[in-house]
Length: 110
Image: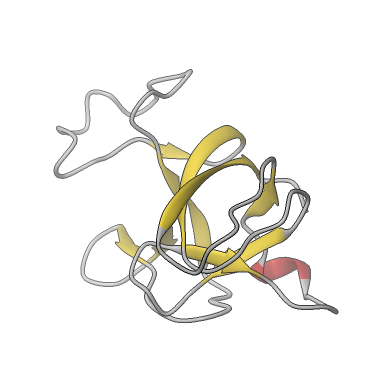
């Protein structure tokens, strides 16, 4: 999970409910926009919308709105009454333990 800003164009998120959240780094993008700008190390592909695996921490229920967490680059299930600007997307599957893991998410859906 990344945000706009920091030392480079985008930076890994590292705090809960970051309003600057931008998207999720994608290993298999449907569209390789900005492909001439650099390599994966300097200009990784970022999913702004679509179905993407996302690193998460904590329990997640299918349908939960995901937000940034304090674990760098990981999302977590958001609490009730979320402001839309914190939401990365909606979980398409559940994760039943508190350990780090990966869930499919519809990024860009509030």
